[in-house]
Structures are given as C-alpha cells and as structure tokens.
Image (cartoon, rainbow, N blue to C red):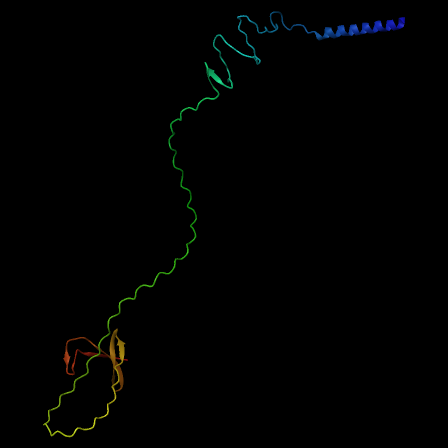
Amino acid sequence: MSSTLRYIKLLLLAVALSLGVSIVYAWTGPTAAPPNENTATPINTSATSQVKSGGLWLGSLGTDGGALFGGSVTSPQFCLGASCITSWPPGPTGPAGPTGATGATGPTGPTGATGATGATGATGATGPQGDRGLTGWTGATGATGATGSTGATGATGATGATGPQGAAASICTSNGQDGIVMTYPGGSCCAIANGNSNTTPGGYHGTLNCYNL
C-alpha cells in the first residue's frame, strides 16, 4: 500500500512540475517600456476622442453633433424628418448634345434582276393610202376624112361582127418613175412623159422619154 501511495505522489509531482514549466514558457514580456505598447483603451464614456481601425457594428447610432463619413453610406431608406424615400427621384433630362457628323455613304448595292417583259401593245391604225399612180397618155386622133356627097340611102346592111379587144397597156418603172411599155419594130421600151409644155402633133401634151427595157 505504501508503494502505491508513493507512486501517486511521484506522479502528482511530475504533473505539477510540467505545468509550471509550460506556464513559464507561455508568458511573453513587454517589448517596450511603459507607456509604449500599452493595451488599447476600450470604448468608454469619456470626452476623449477615439479612433478604431476595425469595423464597428451597433444596434443603433445617434450623434449630438455632426457626422463625417470617409466612404459610402448604404441604407434601405433616407429620411428628412418624417419624410422618407427608398430611392432618389429621376433628375431632369439634360440638353441634347450636338448632332454628330454624317457617316460616309456605303457602297452601292448590286443591280437587281431585270423585270419581266411586258405584253405586246395593240397594233396601230392603218396608215393613209399612198398617192395614185400616173394616168396613161391619150392615143393620137386620126385625121378627119373629106365629107363625101350624100348618096342615096341604101338598104340597111347586116350588123358586122364585133372586132377583137385591143391588148391592155403594161405598166413599167424606169429612172424612178412609172410609165407604160411601148413596142416598136425590133424591141420595146418604157415610155415616161417628161412633163414639159411642148405640144406635138398626135393629141398629147409633153414629150415622151423611152427607156430600153
């Protein structure tokens, strides 16, 4: 029993010594002579001004004098007396600035596709009829024969047969003018009146120009 008690005493002594050494080594002395490196003064009710470098949160805040804030102040509303607002009303619109310079004209766009061809218009009215062609000349009148004495009236003879009808004159064009075809021994020509005022024996006015066919 005495050995057990002795063992307990030694154990308690060892624990006490270890605690004492830890306390000694945990304590650090001041780094400067007083009043330097003193512990900061806590917030108190004195008239001495205090500066706190860290943040400070309060349930409420009131001042008997003015307040100066070095940064922004955020609040859900702003009140002047009993009048409170949650946002600032919009200010008046400022005057319009000068009109900027007109920008450069953009490049011309591509030419569009050719449209469909329209329907053909109605046929125009028929033009006036052209001038009438030249009238053929009058043939020569034969000479009047001498008047014979009046003979006795003979019996009425039989009616002779009707002679063949002469051939129609053929129209021709020469030297830019219209004429008629005249036949002569050995050939034919296109006869065209020259339009002068000479009168020739034959019953027609003017002179004929005959162009070879």
